Image (cartoon, rainbow, N blue to C red; front, side):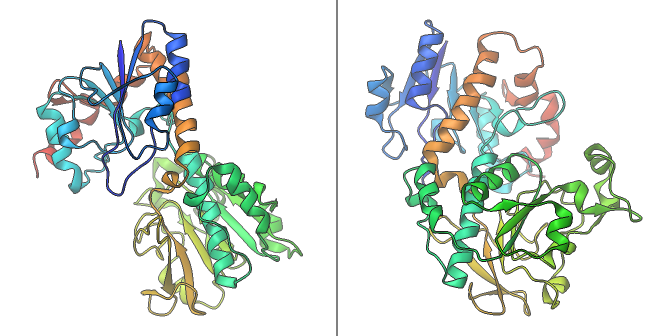
Length: 400
């Protein structure tokens, strides 16, 4: 079998990669009959020379490989006819801007396996960059708070060599007695907690967070069951909630009345109630001054997210009175961070974590048995047709 690593073609450039030089060397050692080729790239976070030093062949084209790994959407002319390609296609929600990409995939009879659709039989994702989105998102929340209060100044994550340098930067953090609420219970939320723990911020329970004052900065983590109710009762389980998320009232405003910083790292069904409303924001008891919206659903679960921001310019303001974009640090503004590609800020660490998951959980399925049919369920297109699992995309492909 031949594995290929394609160069990324997105603009702005994405420096991440599916497999690092160390990962490739490990695979070659573990599977002596495996061939690995890496397409030359001038922007990748690991240089071509590092792959060559690890004994990996560098090429200008990987279309002769059986399985090709990318990260973001692949340019049309780089789609390898009748080959298996893995990348984030961003077609699952019928995104209009990628309709032609899926059409080209079908035309060239590419077998498309989307990382987002790789799931276990229980529905949980096998891999993703969620942890790193949480790590950087929480770091950016600290940057925003420091800027807003002129209390400390952190180097942006994308200017740090890696997470170790980010850790050294966080020694500058001075939050007074600020309270931070993290929503969600998955990998994104856990990544956010990693950052706050590294900054020396103490975690407290939800009752403590809601009812006590502190002389130090603290945070708490609330998940779906902690901020949804029906007739005064919380869902008994996540499964009960997702059976019909529309019947549950969102009670998150109990946190916005006491929190200074809100880091959104939650799962949200777009049919569910919003976490708060524009009316709530105008109220005097809405205390939050900084929102790091990692979920980045535009005017979705967090209505103050008016647009995605960028790595180069990550922060903007939301005017509490008008509901319009404003000076990020004005007294009447909420400071918003809504970067939608946060893992790109720490490409080396994100690539190392993601690649290790590929080695541990996905590549063995190609080389051996896939008893859970993980690859089958994740295949969007094959032999020029949508698979049964993704037949709902046919009207999208047809332009209807």
